[in-house]
Length: 148
Image (cartoon, rainbow, N blue to C red):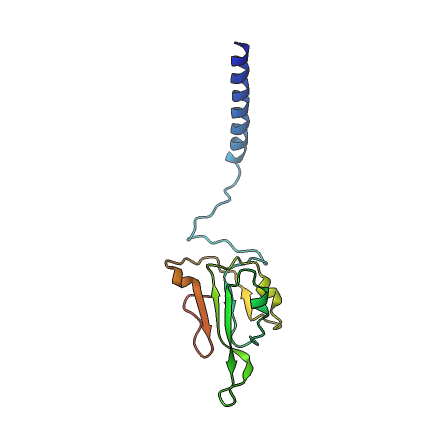
């Protein structure tokens, strides 16, 4: 019989402790926003969607070597007359289905002051089909629609 009342006491104590934690947050300001009407400003080092600058890339492949998930592919450009490789990229592709946003590709990129591949502050990016996760930038064509 005593054990029954001890159990009731322990359960009641745990319940009141949990309610105290909940009650302490009741009068604090809200930490959520009404998305999409309100948008948060990401911090300085936020790792959002990747973007690629076709003009500054030297096709050095350092981003590919640094990527732990192998989600980056590229094809170096060739001189139209000699067909020799030049320090430009023909196309560059990122598979966002594999990308874990680790920033290693950005750190490995040797171009300065602007990195060829870099994270943006874009966090609002929904995809309806798997094929949309492959984003390809081609030399001489506009950037992919809706991508950073």
